[in-house]
Length: 292
Image (cartoon, rainbow, N blue to C red; front, side, top):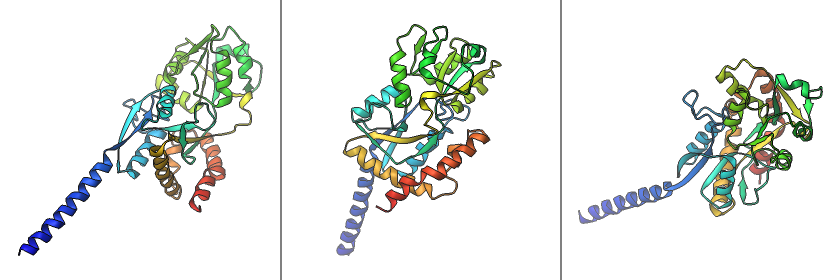
């Protein structure tokens, strides 16, 4: 009897220790960067949590039960500073070729987006040369245009041009994407640089009757698409986490439905373009990593 009780005690102790071990693992946390930037991140009541990167965070959280997951609203500058400081934060929508990434650990490709565009009030079109594209450098020289931009929030090429012109009196710097869009919709700005899908989502919500034009950026002519990655800090914690995230991305890419959340908010023409890019480019690093 005593042997049986002792065996039961050992069994219960083992189960208890396992439970404690699992619980201790779950005390490690990840803070995911979010921002009010629909349809990439949707924080308001309508469609809340249904943004492209909201859904990616949910998928990753489901695959990483050993972590506690938190979401924290912050702009790009703050996210970059926290990453560089080695904090337990990850940024799900990082553009690879931007500044300040020497301290970032990047995942495999997690999504593809169509490039930034110049979005301008149609009533100002007579100030611009004819065509479907514009030079960003030339645009900044038109002093009568009120231009709204964010710092270090675009590709390296655009960031460089913005930084060269950000102190001009007709240029407004604001790192809140939604503020810039709202100012454009309310006729307090004439021009912003933004992804068309982001602007069209907000314009539909606001039901603004004004017309706006979208232009390709001459200096980005070679960039037909933008690859997007998850960034975690470049320390031991971040490297281990990125390894786990990569495994989830590879497994997810095998599902025929993995594109649904990534394309949901785009129009049919944009969906067709993005499907082609995904077929051509998305699986390259997944296949290479899988066979290493």
